[in-house]
Image 1 (cartoon, helix red, strand yellow):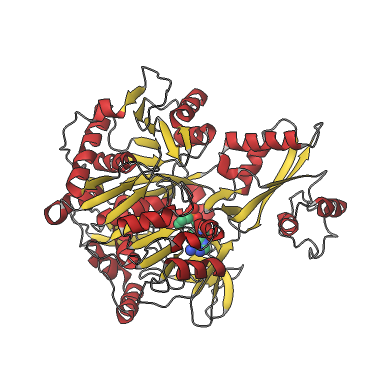
Image 2 (tube, protein in one colour; image 1 turned 180 degrees about the vertical axis):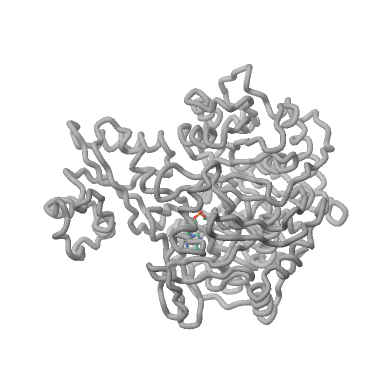
Length: 632
Ligand code: PRX
């Protein structure tokens, strides 16, 4: 097992070692895993191409480390504990032994359908155990999984399937979500009608008893393909740098990009970070409320916890069903020890009142985690007071899809915590703040752009099918550094606080979106001439979506608004629907024709009286019109 730090001295020592001699540091961690063939070098890298390789020539299969190696010591321990959407429905438990056998059966089923090493498999599924099983089954046979959050639209799903050239889609028939029953297979059918020409099989897990359409050539039932398979399946030998998965995420421009993570480094870093950030101890029950459709679910529901031999809970439902006490009821019911969620959920539950957590015994909780967006002080304090009762340190974990694992965080009970501060880098992580020219700001009590100047094992390797894009987005802004796209401040004592994105990426309820993506969706409406989308502060969601829309020959009424919302839902999914739509006659532009988003952001953020000099705009008059009509 990777090292677990348990004192401040050890943290300092580990950190120093990891900076002075990163290769030795990560070599030692790497050697704690089962390798089919040991690696012969720990790291090769340059950030110019970029080209980063960890655990060179090592051969492994991550599932042997997640499953097989635990059988002897904890074969009967619960690996996955599943809590259903409906609180009265039965829970499910998979021991490590049962999980291994389920993964192997699934792996054999995938093979029967012609899936082999290197093939891409897209998942479009709710939070049921079969999602984790399917993902691990891909890893078992060396197929590359790409999980698409099941809230995305058919178009968004089709875009991802096409980009990955996936051979198979695995979905469910329907998805229980609160009081709703969502037709998942129907969305897949729609996606298949649009494109998805690479797909040979749609594997359908029966989750409810709803009716679905069936296409006899491509559709297969999970239970018919998988249940009769052998529970033995040799784990495919993978190179450390073979692709483990692709996960699509939004950037400032263009379509979502496929972030690529590879087998060796990702394995070492997710295990190491999981054990240290959550201080997981034998017998603990760990719960991360994220969806496996996001990186948090990959690294800290599936891989990190299983690599560490933990009991990891999967929750099918939503925080407010059947009522706003659900999270706390589940914590009490399963005596959860580590609870990891997003600020947006904390704020939403805080707004429902203190009486909800007060009804439940939350004394089992030892560590509280936060992830996905900046946590405001009020939410931090409420989480601390009402959930942790002052006894459970909050780990405000900063990281990204691209980083694969948590990079900046307090270590609970080891380093101090300060509201809204992600605080300290993990061992092996070298963050720097730079100015716009890339000069490193060495001093404390400053703000700057957050970069990382040295690779860590789970760093993004490429963007699938487009290495140039990876280079341009992350490694070209500042020479020799990975640029995160975030702005941050360092306090007087050296703690880091991540303030938010400095690019055209917005973070709505912890969901990452490119403003350009939302604009493109709005522009699909035939009566829209042009649009501009910005984020604005939102009490619950962190950021809301504000859209300025220029239209042609269309009555600017609620019907049009609804059509725009429907268009965004169709193109991306309901999570991208603008909260506010303002119809305008023009957008403020520079003389070279660039939209001045800075001005639009200020207006949307109720800061419209403080726009600075707008005289150089091509069309300054439009600004007062927009200000007068602003929906603030
Ligand atoms: O802006 C940062 C914000 O979320 C972005 C990454 O989003 P995504 O790739 O979807 O991954 C989210 C889950 C890891 C970052 O660029 N972010 C994430 N965690 C924090 C955060 N901002 C402030 N504090 C955090 N703890």
